[in-house]
Image (cartoon, protein in one colour):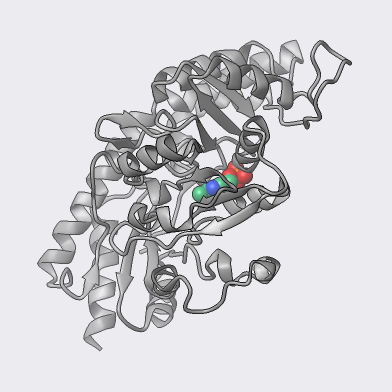
Length: 371
Ligand SMILES: *Cc1c(COP(=O)(O)O)cnc(C)c1O
């Protein structure tokens, strides 16, 4: 049997006719940059994320970058975030000239530990970027409270978390801005790169729109320096087709996660292997992450030979990346992030997986740990 980590072709087969219809239309009218499709997608994403506004941008990375720019963050400022995230979170902070300040994660959710944040707040701290890793929201109440007390901007990195909820609030609606990615492997994936910033602030919305087009306002007049952060109409049109299916796909991912739990429990593996914790709301399972006490890389190799795709998100925490050596953090400084990097493994969780495939994955893990 073959169980890839993600099978986008299986998803495409279910929406092919719709996608071809909307893209055909765009080929005919030849309007490729921003325009009505992007505006409609922005309205739909804002509604979906329970915010006033959404601004379509070129990628999740650019969503983070433009948000930091809109918040006026730059040299001399400190931004608190997790060391256990995709590179873009921390890369964006450094690219605006600010200093990333790391706070270790919680062992159960792999998200930033709110209890450890206040120790890192200084008079230079300007923002917190909580990352809703794997599709589960951070524990936001204590984070928002700290932000309120210390007057900090909160930028949610919701790249992996569209539709995730924390106590009935949607990812991207709790902070000042929410950043989403439409990279193909995200739950709402484009046919290329794309991203979105959500906000309910009129002021930030206006700034984001201006920064997206090189800071131009009106056209060819610049009070600020922005970038080319525009979203393609083609991507927007495809994303609108896919957004209509998103809840159904999320339901299927959540049901696969439930099935995994039953299967792990039936095989007696749920005590030795840590399954994802579900805390405070709706986990959308962009990734289904297990943590094993030993032989993670061997397990990965074994599953690969059995036709099962897996991935390690992420093998090197950000404080140990050579490019961030200047931050003077070393091994042992963020022990929980380092442990997660050694123990975690992403299993296939995409919507179209069959019961047989799920059972096969768990059976093979059982076989590995029985030998
Ligand atoms: C994917 C991702 C990003 C970056 O998104 P791109 O669209 O690939 O630029 C940022 N943060 C996190 C947590 C991500 O998973």
